[in-house]
Length: 182
Image 1 (cartoon, rainbow, N blue to C red):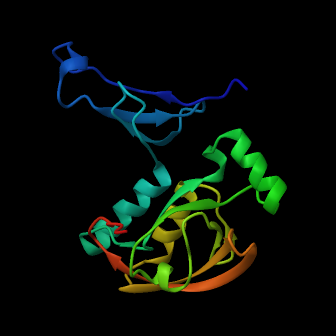
Image 2: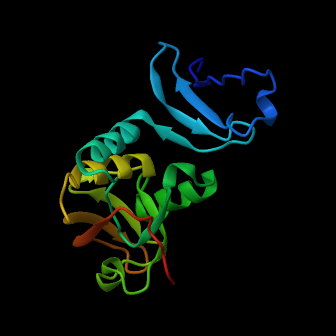
């Protein structure tokens, strides 16, 4: 109950940290003084990037001079971050309390061809349960070490059919950002 992350934010040398263009984030340190990640745009909520993802990105950059990432052709939202009433409904109707809800599927992607639809729940990647997008990114970064294409086993609960399946998804690696087209 008393544990929480603390942002460390250094002010600029001129003492006007809030209006300096370069003061836009910093380290996140836990109560044991361990760096656990970094956050950007501290004035607003910003986004948190865990150190595990940063280290994977740095490792990829050192080896290949770019950060490769598999493009799945989907966007997600973690069940853990949904409204409590929605989480309760998923539990009561489908006995699901973890996973990632598919928000969008890119038109023509392998995910669409395999029948993954908006509203389906991704429960596992390569046989390991996945509950957050951070876990997903860590799993994806660890599977793509220097390859051009990866084959990922995806455990899916199809909400419309009310059935589970495991699909083999081929994903190309790219150093560019992923664009989802509808």
